Length: 214
Image (tube, rainbow, N blue to C red; front, side, top):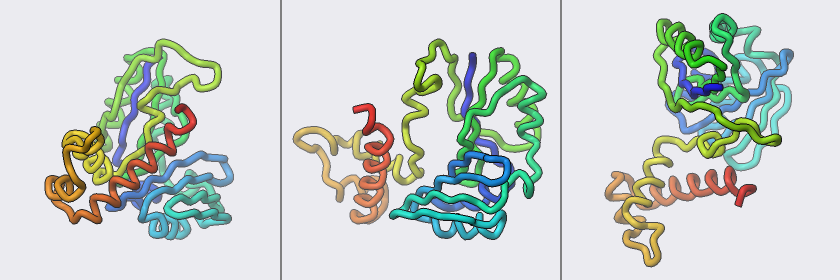
């Protein structure tokens, strides 16, 4: 079995809502409505966009995290030929769909790598596509058949990822520390408080995603 994570720049209500934001939308389709998990500082703007597209029935919010149940299913409003392409090449879509940075991120499975390649060629002929990762699935576990470190890691915003990686490279997490947040901020090109905010958000996401496995 083969798996690829593809970022597809296909216009649509949820993808468009995340463009220019640090917000991520995860979607579980229920035919009559969508269940969304919205995370990031631009969540209110994104939810307002969603409400205008399909309506919002219920919403739970805590900080930058929101769970939204829509009034209608996005498929009833957006023309989406991705599922047709998946079926044509015997590929499977692993939920949830993820929308961030103005793109739809699809985790796609295929028994034959040639089918995965053919699906990619069809999609790339119509939309810009980014291949985030590719791997062969060699084993499964009963409770988490597709879990890898890649899939367990949270979706950092570009700024959060840059802050975290720069802090690591400069020795911020060594004991004793080799760099201060002021020095890292200067390297990244932002104010110290902004850098610290990016670091806190990245660390919070990382602990939230991996905490149950520690």
